[in-house]
Length: 476
Image (cartoon, rainbow, N blue to C red; front, side, top):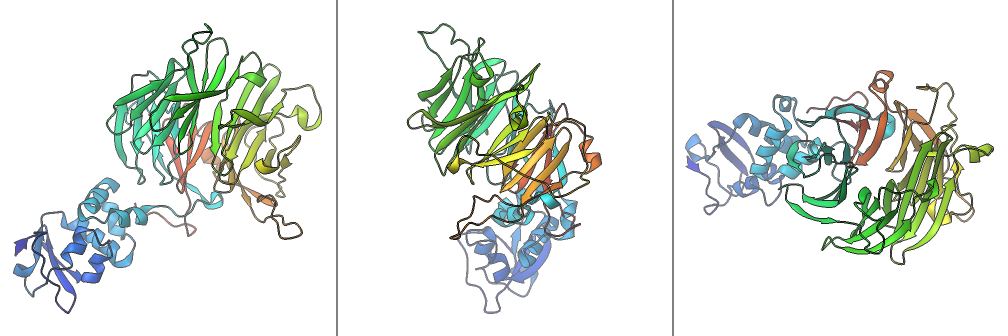
């Protein structure tokens, strides 16, 4: 028996079998099985070594044999065996990294495409300290998430395994965005500036501040909302007296390059954008603001061209005083950046409406109708509503309940042109009654094939996933 030496790799015997001694336990498999983990893996290199007929002819690997048995079963069948439950995700991931088959492992544990109709709560991520979440971002496509709690940032990878935590100089983080794989932008309602941190090492990389020496009112401005494009970071700032703007920051240098949309902030129609979304198809920045006062809700939606700094479209809705839809302003707004679609949820009726950003006008909204009857309602008011667009679905949190609107068909015009996916929608409740009792939904965000839900004054982030088969129980 000899130890593994990457520089001494004889050819495989014709029978294609290979013997491995892992931690004192002998395994016999085929070269094709171990090669299925990838050509660059340690196991693929071992597949080129000849296998003899005795224990002394096997290659010795000083690792856990029980975990190796799980990984070998994964390579054989392309799925994890039930024995994987005996180990944590972190243990399995560490071993898969050692053997160079982590991509196969990550694929095996990743959830299927997210469908709100059959999604279920699979776990709740709770940071070890200061568990009440102040902000989070799931902008990456791999299902990973960054959670801000107090002045700390906890990073959970695509397996939802805690990979790192860093402490910032802030007492509380109220806005957060991953702008590069290892760079995170954060802002605080209690401190000035937008700050960039390396989310792995915790190193402070720099800050951006909105200043104007000619205007003494621009002082200690706070970052409220953050978005980004491949080249730029967009951040809305406001000051004590209501002055606000959006700064455009170069991603490569983390330096401010321009400013757009400066406002006085003396009215609801000029308040700081609380949400920013960049749409790649149109290269448009969408900003929205919602305020709530004694006379109800009021707010605006505004679209800017970041290249020219010009407003290309805007609309505002008063809080009260008009009939019909005009007396039913939106409580929340979101953007489907992939579909170039706006969505809003009304504060009084709870109605949901969508608009095609390529066909905006004076009244572009199409109000969705729910053909279902007898759907349960949680609470008597829709004012505490949030909406999130993700994967051609509309997720709505109404007070405590979580529902999804899924498109069933597209409306087609003469000539075959389709109307931006608008047509029949079907509403379903994602959660159960007992789920809704956990607290008020404050934010919803999709990432990868997961939906993340944050509730008011509740520790942790809920993770919702779909299953390919009804009633399927995850191995891990």
